[in-house]
Amino acid sequence: MQITDTLSPQAFEQALRDKGAYYHIHHPYHIAMHNGQATREQIQGWVANRFYYQTTIPLKDAAIMANCPDPATRRKWVQRILDHDGSNGEEGGIEAWLRLGEAVGLTREELLSEQHVLPGVRFAVDAYINFARRANWQEAACSSLTELFRTADPPVTAR
Image 1: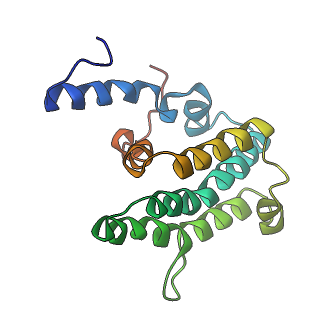
Image 2: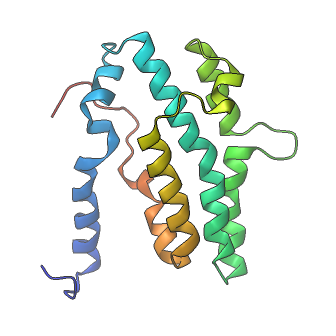
């Protein structure tokens, strides 16, 4: 298939779903973590690095909104920011990640300082935010819809 080929809506959806095999839930580390085979230090590292990503999601979503000229779309998209940051006295998802960090033995200060974030993770996450800032809003929004591949129950064995 060439990039100029047009897919039917059904074929397009299937092509997207085929990419689900590359989603993080199929990574050997993710599988080991869910099978209870990761060490405490590995879990702490995963939480610290994933926390960095989670804290940047509202920034990415704000960048998408900043490039979107349609008020109706922005009103829908803003909920994604509120889900992470919280709203009207309610805590958002970032608070849940802070609690998870504490549960695995990290302090809030460690997480917020970003001292455990690996350089490659920082580079990839920052590049994602910069992409959202520079891309047209539709393209940036599409890059944000990985929930398509999420499942309620992560795999417990390698495929």
